[in-house]
Amino acid sequence: MKTEEEQLEAIKQWWSDNGLALVATVVVVVGGWFGWQAWQQQQTEKAQAAANLYIDIQQAVINQGVVGGEMSQQELELIRSIGFLADQMQDEHAGNGFSVLGALAAARAAADRNDYAQAEQRLQWALDNNDDEALEGLLTYRLAVAKYAQENYDEALSLLNGGSTQYAALFAEVRGDVYLQMGEASRAADEYRSAIDALLESQLAYRPNLEAKLAQTGATRAE
Image 1 (cartoon, one colour):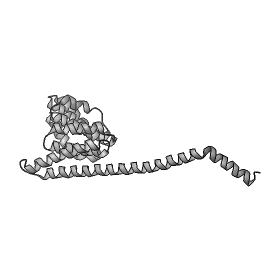
Image 2: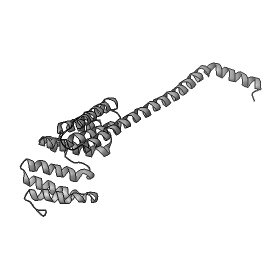
Image 3: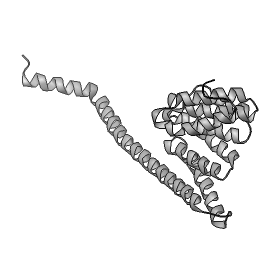
Image 4: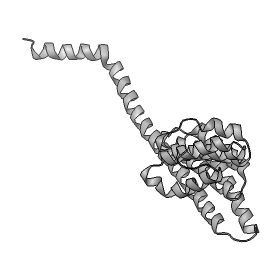
């Protein structure tokens, strides 16, 4: 068994051999911890800034919706502010989920005033920058509608292949709308039937609208 002097000498030798490395490790770990804390704080601040911008966009969209009559100076200013805020969101917070929601809100505002080119631009950006699988179906659906509204039928159809169960009926409905507009009533009828069959329980309120569209093709539900 080692004496106290031998143990002390062993500790001194170990410190001589390893002390500098130990201090360096502690410095790195502690520095890394504070660096991590600073990074987390920075990310929190960025997320809050993105959330605030998103709230501003949503409020501007709501305000645009309550402006009635012919386009007034107030409405023009609201439209400009929506575009400005959405651009700022995309430029400064492209990696944040709120930027996609902001683009989606701005696209909705553009579509509400029949500016489908602007809606398409916002939605394409949102789809390209989205990493939330739950949002992909909605973004794809609205982008297809924007393309359909501009008579870009082939592009709309190319987006509407497949789709999740949640959006199967909506995708089929838009395909039906496209085919009907292209003069292909039989294919449109098939799509409207598919849309009716794909309705989820929560979507059954849409059934009368789909049945009315099916009737426009001259077909019946049983065919």
